[in-house]
Image 1 (spheres, one colour):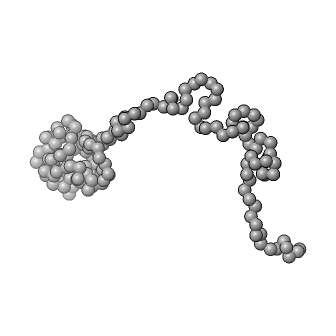
Image 2: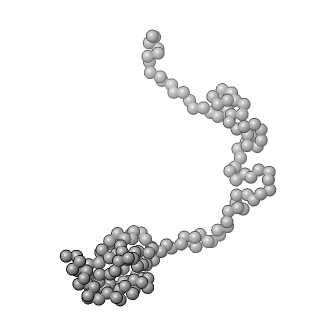
Image 3: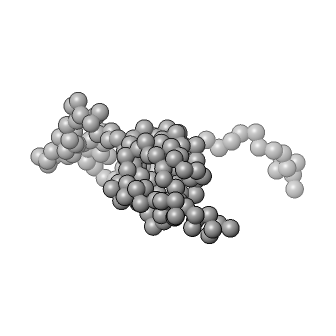
Length: 157
């Protein structure tokens, strides 16, 4: 073995320059563009539709002049009563957006409306809702009496 083969390479091989002639390293004739036609001869824009008389890309897209604000819909969130019940500790507890945020039931950056919907469990105490509530939850909240409160406490023991 000669000393020259053991030396480190000093020059890296350059990348292939496609379409720059026969010595470019990527063929010389068509260089990946196929045969003939406008796409082979020059750069064609992405919106180019060819010779057919169909609508261009811009004409196929809907016109949104001044309607962008209307597209951003406010999202509404329905929170199930079953998820709230474990956090209710006392009679007359206030349930509002701040309460749900503190318990991790809604995200801090949530800007839509929150509505409490009924679940399968019953309320242990009468609660004050500062949020929109479904009719079923209202009825459940009105049905809560001291008798049901005692039965819940006995089950907990």
